[in-house]
Picture 1: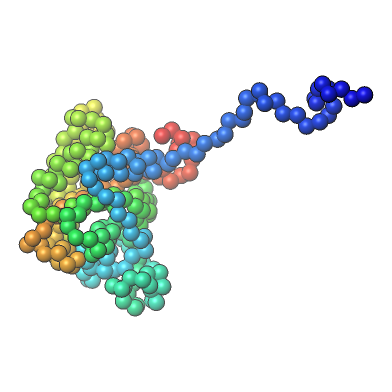
Picture 2: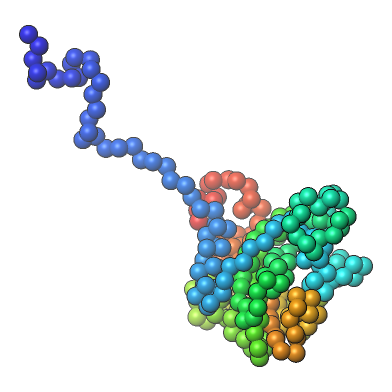
Length: 274
């Protein structure tokens, strides 16, 4: 006679010990660039900025012409461009501004996102456009052929460089979690802004290799009147400022990494440190 109290472990039947601890499930790990972009988005969202996105394959109008960099302009030499052979423009068939036979390219910056946004939205405008960009250049400790860039745009009435500087100070103080960060503006040239400036930053404790030294962190300026005209805005009524910075470089400063190629190496021992 079979006993109802027979131990299943002795009978050979399948048996599960529900009191045994479970196996630990491996969890995914966010890449440091993803963490950086999440933090940037949170900071600018707190200042009222909206996140805007655009295609990585662009046309000349949005990437150059609308940004006051027409064909044969010397400023085009500032960007080493990857051009795409697609004479029928099948990749951007829904864009009415793309003409048949016009050259396509991998975007060299995220500024075309600003143009696309201004074409479809009226001021006041306050956006950031983080994303991947592409440059045909040699790789080294501080350069890659593809990298991540953050650009910001604000368009309204009566904006000045003082507003730009204030936004930069708030961002860097929150990003690096330090109240003693200083920001300064130096004159520079970018075809889509006038005047154009370089944004430098320093803080006590040493963000750069040498404590208290100024470090260039962004390019910026007041939106060029021609750019506003190209998107249908009256530069006599509206003003704007724009800024751009490399997310890769921000990550290098924040984590004190001296070779940007490490972030793209796929080395989990490196990635899991962040």
